[in-house]
Image (tube, rainbow, N blue to C red):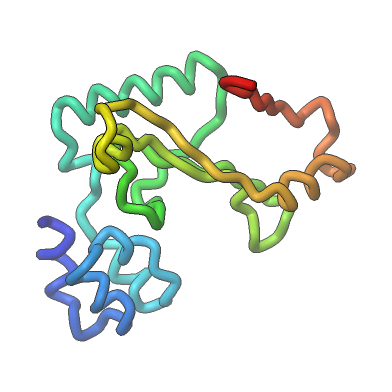
Length: 157
């Protein structure tokens, strides 16, 4: 509601895509590539200021877990995944070794997805990776093998 109120003040200045998003999915305006939209987005309300107590506790737990694990991270309050079933946290793993196509892996938490499809309430995290982008990183002299840490663990056969 806060985003809709804020962006409505600039409706005539938003790109055509963002004007449509204002009605259907205002969060996607945060992800606009239009230069004028990006200027408007700079002043928009921050999501962190609208978290419920439950969401704030969850987010604090994620941050604490990352810190304890020694995983470097940046909080991007304007990061939006293009799929609406995500809940709580979304993420991207990015690199500066691949030029403009720096997102290597992205995803998020989607606790309500299985129930939405008629199944039982089930917590979940999902992601997708660009295999070609990952492959480009492996032989790269700029990223020695000792710095590449990844594990893929299958849950079943």
